[in-house]
Length: 407
Image 1 (cartoon, helix red, strand yellow):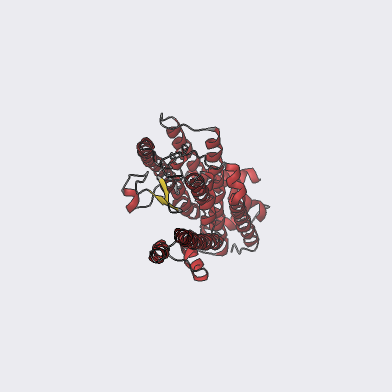
Image 2 (cartoon, rainbow, N blue to C red):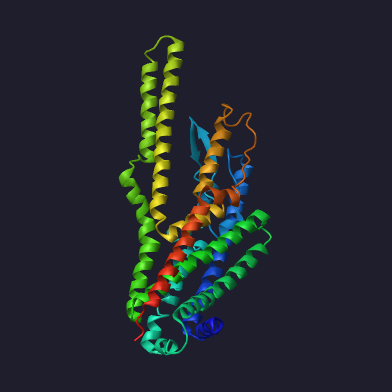
């Protein structure tokens, strides 16, 4: 019986205009986005070769996985230098596509978390309420068919129909990228990409289950559509964007300009006092004290910033979109985890020896965190949030359908 329901749902969806529209939209957007990001990756490789030939203090090459999830790779691949205990990033960016500065980067991550999540809800919003309006739901339940089997069959058949175009487009995009001569995928990269696609399926299942839940809580397709759009807007845009704003209400943090101004004030006051001192030892001691004060100000800023990031992530993880974004970018080596590791590595490279910038320092070497480390340091928590959200929405759908009035 369950197999028959699944087959019926898949066949009905394949013959619907909605499936055709979503399939064409998904395949077109994914392939175009991957092509655009591949061209940007090629330009970033050329920029890296230029920066590397100039013997920049510290610069790393872009990862080919940025074609699928660009994340913070543009910031990661800048040339870093250091002076006075501070890390400064070169203004030379890896990305030279000015369109990405005006519009959102159309990578696979953005298409999944925004566009395909909306398509998932639009695919499921009337699976129950729409059949009730048409009168077919009452006919289906008039015989020996049980409600648990029907709702499970609808979910499996509907989600299978929805996810098939995504897999086709993703496989075509991956094949296009990996066949290019400038792309060299390692076994680690393949594992990252596989986990990214797997987490994408879980993320899309969350919104599909939510759309089906809304359909089981309403009795008209129009009402289901309005509620679905409202819920999608809150989860995808409102909560992720409000996380940092709310976090700043609890943790005050100065701007970078204020931090630099404070450091300059300490240095200026120290130099004014040094000129009034006669002994060289006293001058050196005052300058050392000033450097210690600057380091303390910087350390305080870093601690506040880390607490702000932690609190902001904790708030935004209420939304599965934020959890998926953190998980995907960390898995692909373009997230905040990688940015923190890189800055620590640059700091150690530039200042550990205490020598000047161009003399006696070895070549900077850096490897991005493995997918295992990304999972251990927060990735598993984000994946667990997605899985629990999916289970919660499906369980609520199951209970709501058992109590649904089909008359």
